[in-house]
Image (cartoon, rainbow, N blue to C red; front, side, top):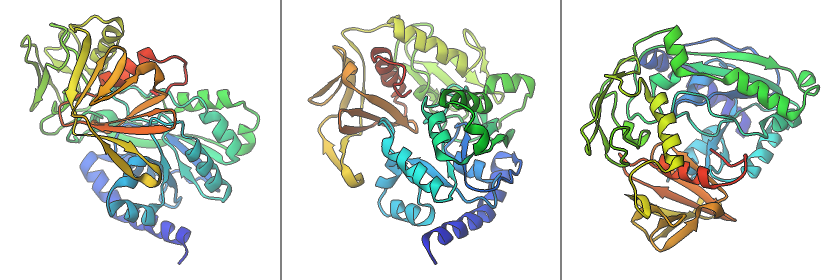
Length: 385
């Protein structure tokens, strides 16, 4: 059996094994999309389960996923994933040029590819901007474009949450665009079309189609997303327990409800409102800090080498001071960091020239503030969010 035949067989087996579980676990409903020929499927990105959720609409259309490079550094498991599914590696916090070439190669071989063009799961319930060059890639591929939207995914398993919930989750193709139609459009027009089709606002959806999302410890790890207290304006004082988020500095307490809102909801009704506020305040410097803006303990600091190898570097504390990202003896000027991104809740990745670094923190640490400070300091619209 050749590799492609093996991947198709694995796809069919996973459809059987996973479909029932997803429907029971998340109350998933999905609409089939019978598209012919090689295609590039671009969905919105809301949970770590998205590859499986999207696949349920394509039971007979085996696809190759573009996956974060870090999964290729898992002992034993990486080799198994590669043998079974052969995903396309993309270094988060890097330019992604190698991944683009591999996507085009597979599409031109007649295969299909699923690309999460936002590059990151949503933290606030809103679809992130997709990479500006996505439309150019789609046009150059000569493949059919399928835009796909997951509705209810954010409240089913928020990016920051340790546990999932059961509520309303629906997946469906929004548009199917053949290559002859795409050739009449320019790259930026295709990018705008994709952004429109996959756009999802969890809070607007919940307002128009209210549903409870039931689970345990609904607020657990919320402090990895929300890092600034609106009452005392301190960073690093928010802690979660069960369904509650509390500030140890001033006693502010909010309960996270099954509908995704806060109780008492003062000053913010939901995570999205709080998140937009804290980013504005962080950018303006309206929070309590000294010369060092903030710091956190880290579990590991590594340089990622070729062949998915890593080299451990010294450093147990991560901080922002003097316009630099600092860990151990290393200090990287924020304006000299070319790209930065996050994986899950606890991994920060960034590139400086040709060097690629990874920082890992423990539970309860919010690395988002480091990403936000870098974005504020970096110049140019094409920096990766």
